[in-house]
Amino acid sequence: MGKVNSVLMIIRKISFVLCLFLYSELFAESTIKASKGIIWDKNNKSYLAEGNAEFKNDDVDAFADKILAYYSIKDGKEVFDKVNLYKNVKIFYQEEIFTSDKGVYDRLKNLIILSNNVNIVSPDRYLSGDELIVDLDKNTRILKSKDKDSFAEALIKDE
Amino acid sequence: MSEYFKKINFNYIIICLIFFQILIFFNNSSKEINTFYSPSNSLENFTTMIAGEDGIDIITADKLIKLNSKKNLLLGEANLKNENYEISSSNVTVDSQNKTTSSSNKTTTTNTQGTITSEGFEYDQKSNIIKFNGESEFSTDDN
Image 1: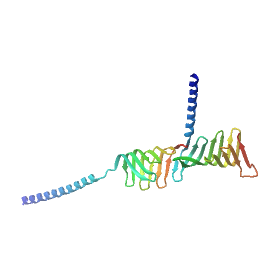
Image 2: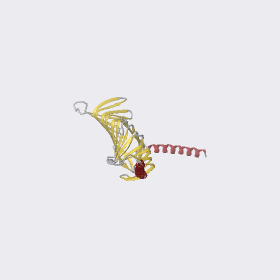
Image 3: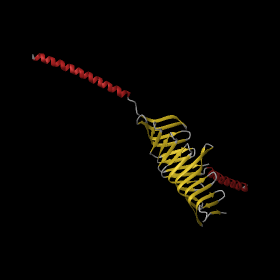
């Protein structure tokens, strides 16, 4: 009888943890902040945030002077597909910080593409180039330089 | 002789008095009519429904004041709601000629994606664009 009760208690605890996990997965949030306002263009299905703009979700925390986020409607709800970042771009992803003049966060492909004056800063390295492609699924970074004679390309893969 | 002049003067005075009496009567009566037919330029606990591109817009406000033939002021707490979004603000100006609605007061907007808080808003119905002015935050539920 005592064993049955303890098994039931364990099942209850597991189901409670599962419920919490499912809840957090169901209600993952994104946030857009701006000091100079947000413009909602219903025809182009976009939000334009201006002035110290920030886009944040469970994966990335991105800052820029201007952020243009496109959404699509799925099951009657608006979902962000693509986030364009303009000027003084700074993206925090796990332990890394990516900076550039321009950036795109493609949520559907799970890619971050940065261009012009790109820098990667992490606890153990500092790299710079002209274009950076971060694949969030494969956890790879491809850094390209326009000057082919010098540093051409760097591929860094975290295990 | 003096009695004759006195009689004439008295008649003139009576005629003048009657004339002024008539003048006062017509002047007063026309004013009364104007006051009576003057339309009321404000409504309290105002609610209206307008057919728009996003279905039926329901506008509610503490008080509606008609500023002129083209502009209305929704005084106090105001709410603009349709099936896609709901804008809650205060002291909202509705410009029916330019098809714009705006407020420079704290605004909360909820739509199918989330909630937007701002220091004011401007809604241009022609371009279907809503500007959320000042410090703004948009919190969404992406799933």
